[in-house]
Image (tube, rainbow, N blue to C red; front, side, top):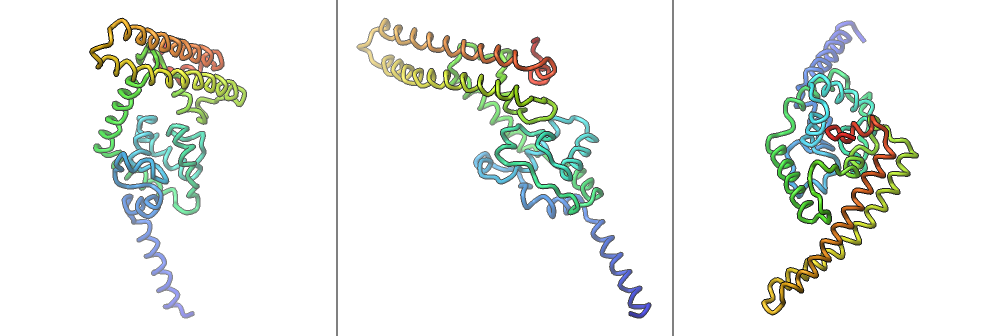
Length: 265
């Protein structure tokens, strides 16, 4: 190979290299992220069928867990290279559904990952997605209240089992295998007891509604059914409180502070 040809090839490779490194954060995101993560806002109907969380959802959780932009960027770069379940900011049940993303180590440079991080932090989550999630969460609370078998339905009474599920595998919670075994027993007993009560409540409530519409049925007869409903809800509430007490005994102070930051335990 003569000198001029060699020089031409060297210049060509350098030019290609500079073009690649000159890619924008948006272009790099489309190239490296779009095959798994949806780049536009999903509808509620789409969410159950997605193979990976949309970037709207990913950044919603990252920003919720890490208020500082510098921490968000560092997290994204680190996680894409060394993804671990214990590092995730999404709920553990969502990780169980989607799995942990494969590492892109060696496929994307740190410099390009930083560009991607800058772009997605500035772009996501969209206002539309935040509004949708807020509405879904509000509706979820309303449905939970409407279908609740408990007498006490206030935010001050923490749903510890829900918080545990969301943080189950996270390193910051640090549940030991022994703690997990004990907590699973508590959850199984709780869910089993409440499930039986909910089934009976559904039948009784339907009967009360039907009786209330019948002019020939006296209020005294309806009262009997209502008393049965109240008794079952009292039983469910005691199961809920026992679950809370049993779970608190299993967890240490630091774990309780993480799960119940605004509750005096």
